[in-house]
Length: 340
Image (cartoon, rainbow, N blue to C red; front, side, top):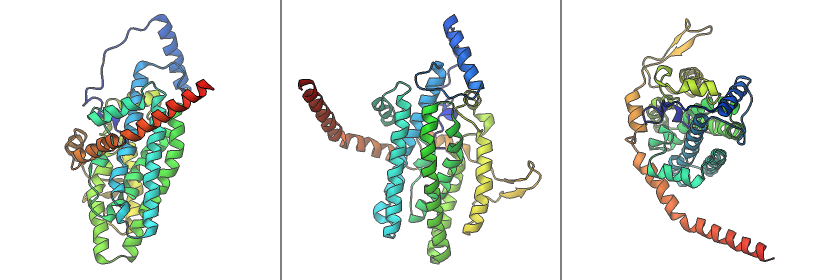
């Protein structure tokens, strides 16, 4: 998923167990809120909500927004090196979409009471996180296709349930985002299919190498195992999270194995095998994920953590004159209106 906020709170000291003593009025509002959640109602920005619900949403939505913006970097690096004009136009449109997704999500997060400047300051200082998947480098053109196929495929698997999130502004933003992410996944797979069907032996090897490097980090996108994700239960109780980490991860593996077979690549897991006895219809068993690597990357020690954050800070600083000019123009227009 493009946000792992709920799953990393405990490691980062975000999960606090102090219970607030509610007044009779607050207790009444809490009971009404709980009843609406139980009924499957949507919560709007102006509705009363518990402080922890608001904080959890703000953390998740802002991290999701950060992930969309930072996620532009690994692919944007290849716009000028795309092999054809068609692929360049597709990649340019995709990166532009990601920027738009970030804006939708920042707008949704702002309805919870925090300004965009505050959210970006938290990102630039390292206090706020973004998805661990974007701390891996894009070494070849095949990486761009694999990001579309696997990374965006994992994101779709995780984000479609958020279209039913109990917080309405987040759910509404996700409907359009998921539609566009579906396009991103299809174009990535198509790019790889062209290389695997019509490419040279070197290009086919390049695709396999990219799959080898991205497969395990993509499985980590769904967050830690359910028994190591203590905050997921509350998120599901509130309707923020709809499906557990392990369930989504298994669903992704089951779908992706068949796609890999059509593509003609091998997923880098010697323990990957069909198990007809699991569940009603069977599932693919897969190997053990290196969670030490996951936590190391989340903690800031991934292959390109510093490079990604440095690029975002530089972009913010370089764009200061644009923001200042826009504010100056807005003040000028306001002055004219007041004088009229």
